[in-house]
Amino acid sequence: MNIENSTNGGKRKVFALLLVAVLACTFLCACYPQEQPPDYTIFLNKQSVEIGEDQTFQLVPICLQQVDYTWTSEDEHIASVDGNGLVTGLYPGTTTIHVSNGYALASCTISVKRYYTPFVLDQEFPTNYKIVWQDEFDGDKVDTTKWGYNVGVRDYYGESRGPKYWGNNELQYYTEEAATVSDGMLHITAKREDREDMEFTSARLLSRDLAYFTYGFVEAKIKLPAIDGMWPAFWMLPQPTNGTSSNNVYGGWAKSGEIDIMEAKGRLKNVVDTTIHFGGGWPENQHKGRSTTLQSNIDEWHVYALEWTPNYLAWWIDGICVLKLNNDQWWTSSSDEPGAPFDQPFFILLNLAVGGNYDGGVEPPEDFVQAEMLVDYVRVFQQPTQN
Image (cartoon, one colour):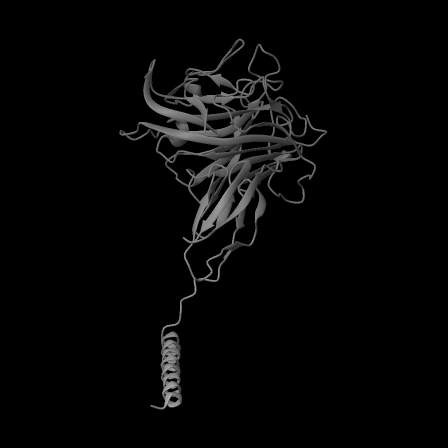
């Protein structure tokens, strides 16, 4: 036997087998490549954002993969986020918005601030207004250092006795317990509930003797009940000159004036009224105003405001001026002074009436149980020289 030839032959066989194995492996790898894990990392266009109440900010996720995203807010009371990453500031504070694609997570810190400035107004509006009074309804009950109550079916103040059923044939009996504070809001609840000779109860809050103003910018963010027979209102009456009579220097209604910043008929789902009452004493009273059709229903949040200067009154809804009256468009039989009677201190009222003459005696439906008027805040701005 030739040993050298036998050895060389064995080497060639081993080499051939190795070559076949390498070629086979190369073929298999070419046909079935190893799958690399894709990169699902998410990046956001911002890691922290500061926005104001009712302001929005668009968060944009960036990922190499085409995936669906899930958005969440750690505290939806402070800021909410929709399915497309649009963040809305709701209440002062800090929360975190998260976005997930099922594999990775990214986050953004949202700081919501309360900017104490009224809506951007026309060129006549001064820029140096400062907040002088407010109620954000952050507690768990009505703040009686800011609000009093009307109780019953008529107003009692000093020696004055207002007309029964509030002079409008209203159907409610006002109670203190119908006004509550929770979830950062004032709740005024009208119920079908017998009280004395009335079939309904509700509440009427007023800042008389506690907070009253001459001129400025008065605003409130409110949701109203869009139900037949409801009569919600945000308005102002003259602060009495002293504690013995509900009149001020110009006398009884409407010599001393009334400013209705907003009132609504519940059956008209997207209409509110803005009005002033003035002139002589009833029945020689006069009024001016207008009805405004809103872009959305009254049972959604809207900001109602009054811009009050010595020269004019202007009403604003959601930042849009809907009515402006100059001081030569009103008067009082008790004075020839320009601007009278709207040159004196006025206080604020919030109430939810039922029925009454305002809407021609329309009553709630037979299946009515209760309805709510919600108030997020009331704020008053003035220039430093105003009081």
